[in-house]
Image (cartoon, rainbow, N blue to C red; front, side, top):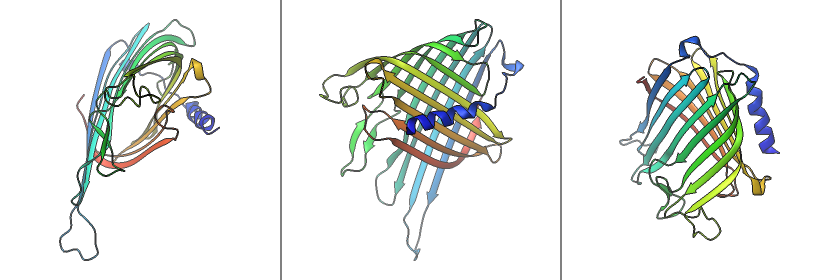
Length: 277
């Protein structure tokens, strides 16, 4: 029931639409944004208590799109890596994400258009479980790695909301950490799944300096259509000055092969953002 409520809430954001600007049509449009967020505090003879701390996050988002007729191509590479340290403790990883997506669609003049997509999800570097002492490594670059190919139909007549639905093929790659590819026996380093995938992207300008970006991905295997993987990403960015942004993120993830519990990630950050392209 909770998953249905989340899905309906996401669909309600489609009430506002915007056409693709003429300036973007029939040409390749690159965009490259990098961001750096830093938080630091230090104490000397501070009688009220406290401890030194430092944290930073480096992120990048590269897009290369083509809005033509009849073809539309969308390409994105998004990565983020962050670390933090409190007092004399070791540095800990706080952000560790890599996402690559390529989407090609063909306009037939219908309400929906056929499309093909390829998506890659992984980590930038090693990930650890810090709830045990000493910490235990539980992930690395493409360990696990997820690759999904989907063919189906896309509704992309509006720039603010794009919805895709189709037949999906998902591959899970591992090396050392086979609990992701074979959670029962932890013996196989590769898992192949076929099923149904739905992806909805929202990019909505709330105000002159506030933008909401959201992505909802649903995937279910044909052999277990009563179980759905859910990845719901929400990002609200507010531009304070030309180079200073405030970002609030809220991610909800449910993947039964990873854990039976719903994963939630939330963050608020002030940082420097620079548009290279």
